Image (cartoon, rainbow, N blue to C red; front, side, top):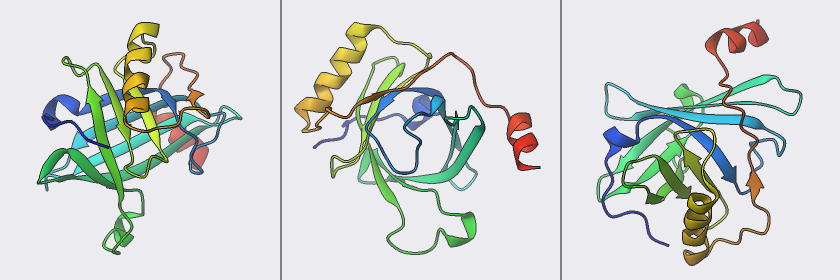
Length: 168
């Protein structure tokens, strides 16, 4: 498996809509309107703010932090542990950018063990041709897409106010 050779973090930052993914235990199979927002922290790390609606349509958030691999800019190490526990060794996951569109409008991200894969877009919907192109790259890099989940997207985004209302 290979990550992109040239990666511009500044262009990658911002909001992404999840087009689809391979199943993972931390995300409901029936999650919808999944987004990920990446912002740069003062210390050079990246804040990862994942949001979605669960199967009951309730808002859910997972906050994490990513660090860029200094030797391979298209490779990040991500953790979703609470901030006070992020120092614990071996709690970061590899998150490799496998393909990114020239305009940074679409990205394919996966883990080197081929367990997890995400197709991301700046818009809630992408063309069938673009999706096929990116999924072909996933197959070329050894991903089995038999269990691929197409994420329902309406363009809706979970807000801070909705999260506050459900936690209070």
